[in-house]
Image: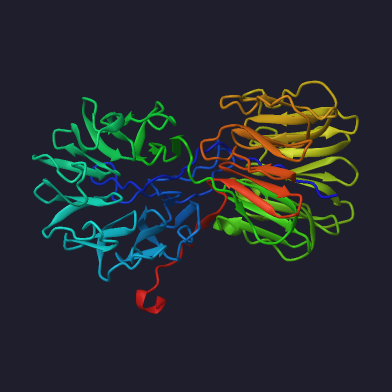
Length: 579
């Protein structure tokens, strides 16, 4: 019988999708971007992808890493998240296409091209913006060029010199070098009628537009349903216009939003941000520590079913893996540090950690690959004594259940998470900075960091265990689930039902019910708790997504990282050589 290795990692909130909004000037770039994900030192609190900005599309999102690699995730019905190789300085997510500004100042677009929106013009650019079915670029000579759908003139920008551009679904605006704003395209709601005066920044929403004046006040115009154009008083350094709401970044780097809040998209969290981007019913901000936090509803959570049949699955924060019925391993997601490049061979189980994965070969030995932080991939050498029944991957440590029923861990041990107590065990799980296991007498034992009570396992008899970031869940022998530890998102509030399997992610948990349907609880900011219909035999919760093994042995994933593609951060090639 194949068993799922519960995947865990350190908390990092996600970016999700909505109508593309590309804020310009001052604090927001024309196309949102975000930075490379150097794996955190083992002593750090968690992985720090170091995002600089993000871009929200209709049902997909993209970010630019510090190493100038673009990563996209979400809906991929038109290839809009399949990032071409190369190095980029900016990225902008549109409706069903995406455009990126390369380091050689050329623009590359991918995804849907039914209106020519992905057919970027030749030459050099300093900024790029994508939305709806058209795209625009700001050339290095400060003129604007647009391509794609031109039904209402949205691809006919005015002549002259500009310092910044932003586009919405049917109109665009540019900030001229004299600091005045000029807009073009659809104007049915006054969204293309900017007020006079000097501005320092501009951002275009779906049916309204906002700008930051040179005196640092914000002014919006266009359709005002839900009060989206009623900007608050005060001084700001950047503004972003979404679908039915707007947000701005104050001079103290706190975020304030106004307009529609049906999904919580205007309820900005406290703390400081370096940039903020508003989408359809969601907002995301890059904090001053370069981490990302989002609020509102995740719209890029359409379930994705992978081809072929699988026997086991494991979901990590940036990647997922599965053991196919031919016993080979397939991984998908971020390819950073070769985490999606499993070794060849035949395997019986799989575990996905933060930046690494481990699997048990058919000869019961363990092999790991991916990021080697603190020795997380330094599995014991293949010997008869090192035969394993289960393996689990945490943030920067791994654990294996030996054939002799004792546990061996390797990797980061800064909180004692790799120092298991003696005893005989049936199952194990590795969390962010803690680990847990079921003993042969059906009791639980946990060790490692206990900052939120995640190792304070309640008494009782258990048949399975799952370790999340700062919480844990156990499946009792009476088929009920109990969770403990951090409950800031309700991830420890397990429903009173009968289950056959349990998994714990960063801030959400899931279980397979007795009728083989999946139910999830906790954080659903990216749709990771919106389990699809159908019958499942197992489930694995990642950070922004969840994957389930269906009864027909197909794998379906849901949430914002159901699929994720990342461009290799390789040396830029000559465009002529790329064909």
